[in-house]
Image 1 (cartoon, rainbow, N blue to C red):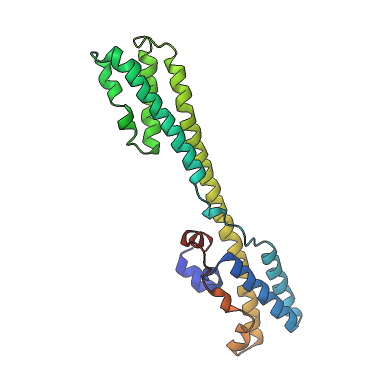
Image 2 (image 1 turned 90 degrees about the horizontal axis):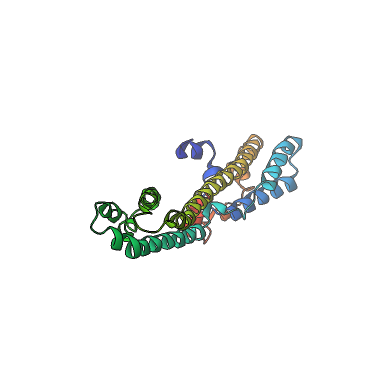
Length: 228
């Protein structure tokens, strides 16, 4: 649903406030209406609002968690792999193959060139280098090279998979954040509609909503954007 449509259908869904303040607004509204004892017609609306509040975790901020951990793991694996490539080039490839055509193939995947690649391309080109290691292991007088190269490369693959899994988890958390926010917003909108059936004066309706809590919380902009 486009943002403007969400706003016009239910402005509670687009309030610029933290999750903590949004839940506080809902709780205060529930208390105010309940204490006003407005009649049985408000019972379903209060029940719905309470259920939305019960399912709303104001501390849920997983969508804004840093990827530093998995990024650090990938960088460490990348460094280990590039060092292996450089050592193999210096100790085996250059001494054994310098004057042979195969040397040009290895030069395409030396440390400096691999180091300039983004994550996806690094993984792709490194697999081509693994094939070269396997093809020329005998000429390099290093029969254990394919296994050693695979051992150095595997942590890079594992770290890449970890980052992808973490990204998927953050995406799921964003969906959860959006879902419970919209559930609470819908309950507030329905309660407001019920109040409008009772009161012709808008001031009588809005006295049940503490919009002083719509101030933007003093939190980092990245976190704030993730929870709205």
